[in-house]
Image (tube, rainbow over the protein chains, first blue to last red):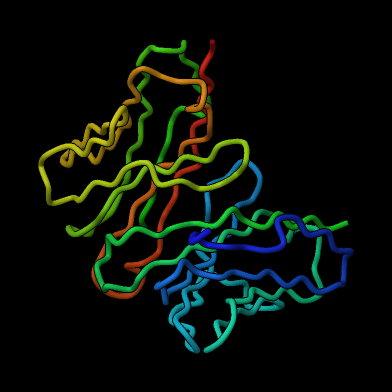
Length: 116
Length: 117
């Protein structure tokens, strides 16, 4: 499967635990974006990363959330000390990074995070 | 602020009929792209169609076409010969600008489309 791969598909955590969401971009893509979808809502931008660089994290909550895209391996969205309000679907998208603002972002299947 | 409004939370259509989903947007940028994404019950996000703002011609992808009215900032999606597999949430989205933030997709809240056999 050459598409964007996210895992796990479903993740259950108790309040106060840490959640780690993984995203492997499409082959040949070096740009990764994370979006969050709350129930009954559209997706909201969180962060944009290139290899080893965070380009824009303006959509990330200031505390408890962090993201990385190391030189080797998948991009990771990390949520520390989770709370019930973090329950959502988290989508990763990737693009080839040609520089065109209209280049399509290809999405993974998402990770549904549930907080008990 | 850049916003996308989808005024129809839910719609239904008979199989083989045609349905139009509406979308309006607001941006002060002149350079932007518009998209329709489909999210079936499996929750994947699938790109359906893309429109470049500077192109007058409406985009078409098989049974899917758009009616792009730039002056009215309207971008509706027409689905012809509806099929059961078209049942999904449909999200209108755009990317605008040429500087910071020009890679952030802004999404509407979605329209839930049900195709009835």
